[in-house]
Every structure is written in C-alpha cells, then in structure tokens.
Length: 401
Image 1 (cartoon, rainbow, N blue to C red):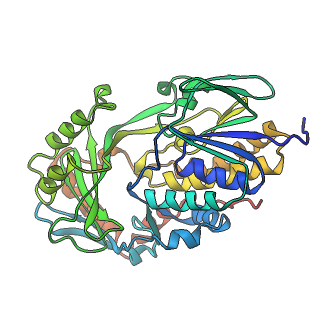
Image 2 (tube, helix red, strand yellow; image 1 turned 135 degrees about the horizontal axis):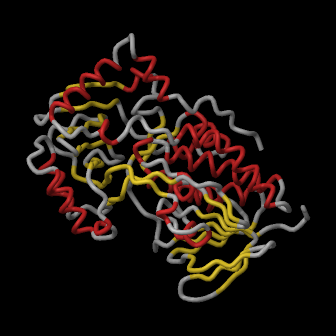
Image 3 (cartoon, rainbow, N blue to C red; image 1 turned 90 degrees about the vertical axis):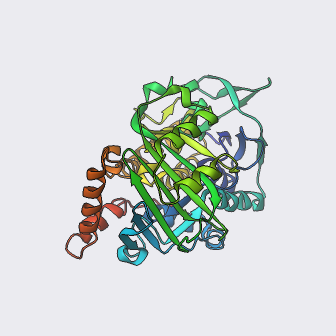
C-alpha cells in the first residue's frame, strides 16, 4: 500500500555506495541520515575505474566534472620479471580505454571526495555522523528501530546497509557473514609507497612469484605509487584486524621476489593507508529483508578480482535511489523493483576472469605459461576475446528516473 508519507532513510556506511545513494535521495527531497564508523573520510585507496553503465550513471548524477579533475594519468599495464623487464605490455589504447586500464581512473579517496563535495552542495535534509554505527535493529511492517553504538535509539522507515564486505548491517538483518561469503583463495593488500627508482610514469606494473604478486600503479602524486599485493593462501581467521600478522604474511610470501619487492616491503610498516582483506564473494538470496536493504559490497561483493566493485556501487546506488524516489510511499515495492532491475547487471559484473589459481600460479612454469597466454590475448586475432570480457556489462540498459 502506498501513501504520501515522506520516508526517513538511514544509510549505514559513508563510502562510495553510501555517499552515492545519499546524493540521489537528497536530490529527491528524501530525509537521509548517514552513519560512518570511521572518525573522518578515509584518504588514499587504490585506483578505481568507471566504464559502461557506471560511467553513464556517474554522468547522469552530475559527477563527471568533479571526477575529471582527479583523473589519473594511466598509460597502460605491464607484467614484468624479477628485474623489472616487461614480459607482456598492454597500452590503454590497445583495448580502446576499456581494458585493465580504463578511460576513467581515479583513486577511491578522490572519488569519495567528489561525492562528499556533491553532498555538501545539496540543500537537503541530511544528517551525517562520523564515529557512529548500528548495534541493533528491530523492525516491523512500518519501519526499523535502530540502536546506535553508545546508546540512543531512533526510528527510520528504511535502512540501507552500505557498510562493505564485512557488513554489520547485513549480519544484524540477514545473519552471519559465513552464510553468504565464499572464500576465493587469498588476500589482497593496497597501500601508498614512495615511487621506486626507475618507475615508468603512468604505467601499472606487476610481478608474480609462486602464489603471490607485487605491483604498483600511478598515484595522484607523482612522488608516490599505490602498491598492490595479492596472496594465494589458506584462509587464516587470525589475520583479521591483526596488521602485524598481515604484514608478516606479505613479507614471508614475497621474500626474495626481486624487482621492487624490497622497497615495497620496507615502506609497508610506515604507510599511512595500509589495507589488507580477504578475497571473498558475497551472494545474497535476496537484497532486502523487510525494511533493510543492501547496497554495494555489503550485498554483492565480487571481490577486487572482478575490478567491478565501484561500478556495482555506483549503478546500485543510482537504481536504488531512483526506485525509492519513484514511490516514496511504497518502499516495499521500491525495494522489489531495485532488486529486479539491478540483478542482471550484478550477475555479469560479479563474474571472475578465472580463479585465483589462474591469476597466481603455484609454480614458475605456471607463471611463464600465464604470460604466454596473456601475450596471445593481445594479438590482433585474439584481442576481440579480451574486449568481450572487458565490455561484458555494456549490454545493461540503465533505467531513466
């Protein structure tokens, strides 16, 4: 049943997904509260890209002028050996700006700054709280009673969980993370390091050793780079939130790796933005439970291996806010349409380009064979197959609101 009631929406998580949906809700005149556990916006972060439907959504949301101010100068990607010599080289133009390096590349921190700037410019009913998070949820047919950390209970018409792969909102409304997460066989780490000597400006480069890889990619500051570490290893719950243990695991698995590994490992302890997390896929039987719905990694993380996390966050936010704004008095219907509309895109976006065993072979022979395969895929004959994967979500027709 619909009504003329104007809803009050709580967004849990002040990252890309949460801030993007808040922008669109506020523009529709919908009262919005955002809670973010961190004490302030998180700086830095790995480069992310926008392509196909996510680029179109960003354009419709008016984000592209701000995004273009922060575009990274990325010229291409190369796989190198232990001495830094290129084994496979893929300039961005090889795949028309739709390959591993896309036309629109921006650091996660800069993209979030763009979103926060847009939020601040909207004259709407926004309540934004840092250092706040949900501790309990109790819902009925008309709304959700939310208890926040430190006490205090408030009622909302809808709660959007946009609080990442380890979403506390999802755990409260749907159940334990283990019910929905699939371990993909490893971990990834990202952090800022001083640009190593001899770094080729504008190029993302990566070097593999058995079961691990170390890479760098351009940063907004030419004096720094973003390190990218990937590890293929057994799941280890003891690594969760133990930074010292995480860094020991990285150092152990990259010992003797050569190239820039010693410089990256030396800078790791003092980096200002060390990030380390499990490679996991989140699959939900449904995106909504009553008056609680999920957005971004909280509801449909494909893992960083897909390269589509930001795309799913932006497209999901655009669709969710559009459906809520279309029928603010019928949130049940809006959530059903959100799921139906966005699922075809998510199903394609979450597809992996192979398993972690493909990405990180366990032997030096396997690494050489992987490089041979990559060189073949860059030939004129087989390049169309690579393009087909890079553009596999372009079929999706973004709805107009």
